[in-house]
Length: 464
Image (cartoon, rainbow, N blue to C red; front, side, top):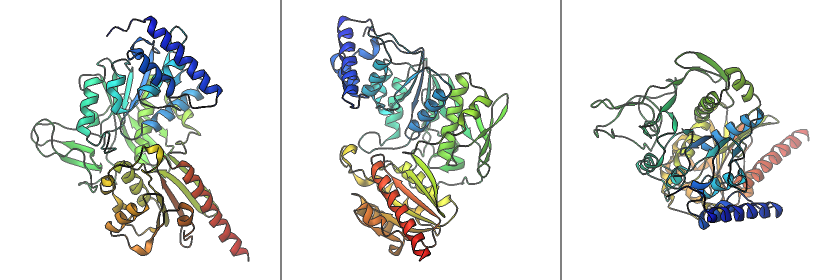
């Protein structure tokens, strides 16, 4: 199909721009609708619209929003002039809206740099028209049962549609992700073997068990979690690729990591101690390097940077620590990683769990089988003194906790989030974890306020 601008394209562009302006005047969300209208009126619209010279794309199952947010924040901090879909959708309509708002009335790009979060399932609607200069693939896991539960299905879509000219930045420790777009130029990143790595996988789910070349059972030198680690086929030689950027030293206590490349070793400050976020930081560092940042400039840019609060927050309140952590219902891997993070933290803990895939913004419910792919067993830990489950899915979570052999005496289960939180036992607790869903941000704020109220009441009782 021709990408030459047509009269229909110009009319569509003007309608989309006017609709975007009108929505902003009305203080409505203008991050998806203008692009949706444009694609409906002119299906080849994205192909005709001029794009920025350099496009950084980020895709993958988990971490793409965090990676994009870090890149966006650092570029803004360093006064870069660019466009992004930070506040919009990561599917075709949202990306079209971002490009429309970043273009003139003749369809020319106003900026020469774009950072785009791209939903992996939307590859067939985006890559035929947009060629990222660099495309980060954070990882590939099973996800929503309705959309992309099978990693081979997702890998096939990405392999078919990612442009050959795009330079891939891939997680070498993910043997599925690292084999996406094998005909493309690649930059691999990795974290070297850690003391916490295992010889055998302890997770319920592993999305690849046999060699995709000869169908022999894969072996592992070590497993980090799920299929992440150093894998190889004992028969045909298929294996985890050698990385270009490797974290060789990880000092969680002092919040430092050392990255080794072919020509140098560089030390960076950690902004978060979660392994997933260390992978995310590593991907961000590579992107910034490709944009011309020095090690000193990158480290300076990381100072004061935090994971966005809708993903992770940490607050000291009186003698307690309150941590909110995205667990992402319908995504068993994200939940398992959150559960694992809690059990590995020091101190005595309480956990408040609200996984709400019934929320109206989640487009209704789906099969709850994902609950049984998530490692609730990680919450069966002596350091976790109480688990509170609430929200529409409270009974599903309660049953799953019982199946993980967690004592019923440890569990509070009520639908009402405030009523459930009111039963939090603060005695013998140092840290309170609130695990929430993408669509439970407001509920999380309410829970956090209630937790603080309980802490304040305890302090008042002490004074009496």
